[in-house]
Image (cartoon, rainbow, N blue to C red; front, side, top):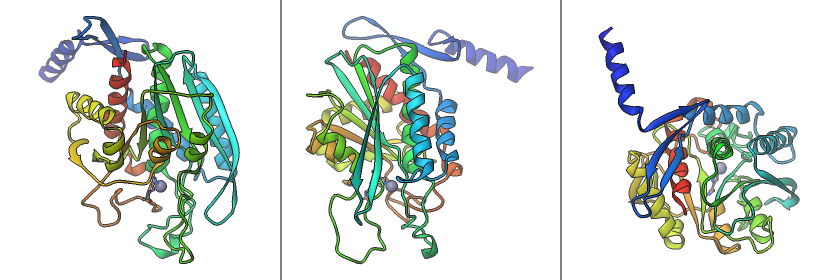
Length: 333
Ligand code: AHN
Ligand code: ZN
C-alpha cells in the first residue's frame, strides 16, 4: 500500500508536465525568447522498438533479395500511414565488385511546401557480409543489421508517427537511404576501391527528390539502439555542421541524456552525412555509436558480426535519441 501511494504521488508530480491523449502524450513548454507555448510529443520507445523488431523479422535486408523488397514495401506503407508524402527513388547502383544493385531510397516529406526544413536520415539496408565477426567462417554471411540499420529506421518511424498527430512549425523530410552497407569487405585482398559505402546517399545527393532541394541541416542516425551506446562528437560533423551538432548535444544533455551524448570528440567516420554534405551541400550531423572500449570495433562489439541482433537493442537508447530529435525539431521556428 505504501509503495502504491508513493508511486501514485510520483505520477501526480509529473501530471502537469506530461499530458496523455489517446496513445500519444506530450509536454507543454513556453519558449523563453518568444513566450510562445510549444507542445513537444513524448517519444514512445516501445513503439520504436516494435518497428525495429518488425524489420528484423524480414531477415537481412540485403539489396537484390526478396526480404529487401518486402521491407521497402513495409517502410513505404508505414510512412504513408503516418501522413507523409512518400517518394521512392528506385535505381540501379554498382557495388564494389560490379554487381548491379536494385536500390530504393525512401523519402517521406511533411509539409513539402515550406522553405524552412530539417532533414532526418538513416540507412535501411543491412550488410551482406559479417566481415568483422570474430569467427572467420561467418565473414560472408549476411547480417541481421538490427543496430546497424534497423535502429535508426525504428526511431524515425516513431518520429513520423508523432509528426502525424501534430506537426512542428517547420517542414521535415525523413530519408531512408539504401545500399549504405554494401561497402568493400575486409576480406577482399584485391585492389582497394574508394566510395563503395553509402551508395544510396551518393545517389540522392546527386538527385535530390525535389529540384533545388534545401534544408537547414540534416541529422543522420547510425547504430542508435545498442545498450549503453555512446555518441561522441563525430569529427566530420564537428568540422562541417558544428552549430547543428552543438544544438543537438545541448538539447540531449538538457533532457538528462548525458550518459549517451558525450561532450567529447570521437573519431571521423565514413558515412552518409559525408556525401550529403559534399555533394548536396547540406550540413549533416552523424549521431553514431562510438565505443572506445570495444576490442572488436570502435562501433561496438556487434558491429558487422552475426550478433547484431534484437537481443543487443535497448529501448532506453532508442528513447534518448528519439526524444532528443523531437525536442530539437519542435523547437525550430
Ligand atoms: C566504415 O566502415 C569506416 N564506415 C562505414 C560506416 C557504416 C557501416 N555505418 C554502418 N555501417
Ligand atoms: Zn554497417
